[in-house]
Length: 368
Image (spheres, rainbow, N blue to C red):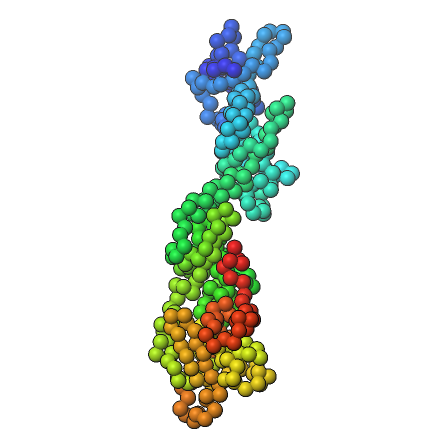
């Protein structure tokens, strides 16, 4: 490895003074991609190495690219040993990936460029990639690199940083990124959280698309999170108006409402008296269970209301002797309803077994 000064420029080579008896010849083909031959001029200094000596006249043939490759190889080994990130420019598309200029050639497999598959590799030519060494061939001076590894490590670090700042009860802004039958996934800025269907709305829903769509910006409350598993349970409905507050003027004993049957059992009916508010009609306050079906509209009278526990009991029998014009009707859309896990059972439930008979969908605990 020598440092020389250009003393003469010819059509396809330059003469370089490296301190010997005569100048060395540096053909342009021995320049690395980092150097433009057109920009070379007398007086410029270059790091070169002697790669051949003419046996007849002792002429030194120099190589700048070999010198740079040797120096780069030492840096690549050091970066690999210390797990450091190095940057390089994509120069060529080859079978299975791309070549990058490190001062020497490096290979990045297509699967190691990004976290998602890359469509057209030609679009990467000229782009700078941030890479880590994943394989070295010391004999052939070949190096395999990965940008995907860098991106995944940065994502994990970002997730952990976010998790360290989360607290139950916090309101965070996020973007809906995916919908599933059981809920919606929201990107909180590095980590996805799940809003289960039961936490999307106070009203009953069949699919999250009834409430949100991909790309929506939403404010959500942190319900639970698992730092080790990097999973977060969210609630959207907690950021919405509470139907118990909105419709407080309708929630009083003896009020008569039009309701929608949600669940039918031999011992009780569950009815939605207001979107997001359920009441239980216990055995003895309705006729045979066979007369009712989910989705059916019935007239009910509110019997007991406990605002502290949010338990309501109602009666269908008490409506029979009331004139239709005296019934305060509240129209309930067929598609609306409250999640069954929101049901609050009244004190008049006949047994613990009956209470346990309510089908609870997956909750935040199950989601975690």
